[in-house]
Length: 338
Image (tube, rainbow, N blue to C red; front, top):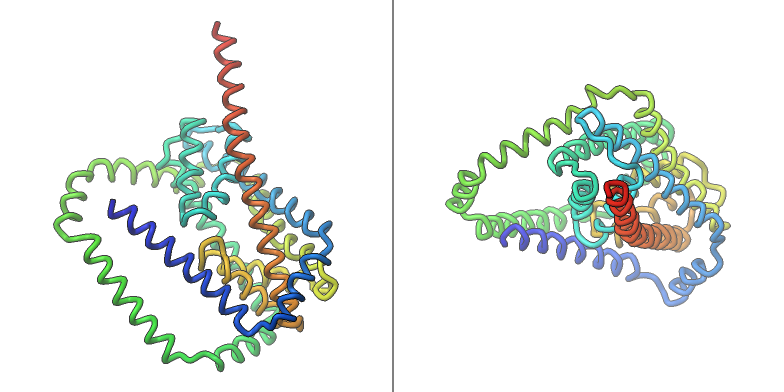
């Protein structure tokens, strides 16, 4: 109960921050400028936005196959379409609740492929570590090619921040967090729960560790590297082609796309579904490349809306597909047995 309450609290806080950022991003926007944002949606070239959606879908084809490669060394070779659908469902459920997607991704694979959840979570943690390395490499590339641009840009932003107020807010948030933790997790309750479930925790940690070290026994290493590169090339191509949906942003190149992926990726985890944070970050990145603030904000909203809509549609279709596909597969097995 306490764990559920903590998760709900995190969801509410994340959502409130996102909604607050939306209002903050629009507080100084005039009625005329808001109409410009709406007009940008109407005048956008949706060919490029559909291409953005297709490339995003392609990245998940590569991600699903890469996950299957990590599962093979620990004795599992799940059906490709079940694995792909689990990946698509993950992004959908993450929009609904923080970290719910990761749990559902592993739960789906257990339900249809009987892969133990703790082992699939281990491979998923390994995936996250590899993706973190990739995004840090991307950050280094941006730093090498765009150091001067972003040094000046962030220096200007820092000059506008009231660090005293930020510090006070941080201290208050920390105190509230400590108090909440104390009341939600009393020492005796924590001790009893650990003692009661110690053997279960150890067993699950062993499975998690087995998933984490699966890469050392990976036979298809070059295929794994290929899929990792393919995923991140798709991520870079998404904003690169997405920029072309507006005349004002059509001339932006690969470095701007890489910056959008790098900073936009961090923005997506700041709030629930990236709402508010993603739009603001993309706006600021485009301003650094000489794009007007309203145009930058317009593109941020267009990009976020299209990607969110594609995740919702693909996620729902994946859940339907899983039910139908596995029902037919079960019927085929039963017919063969009879």
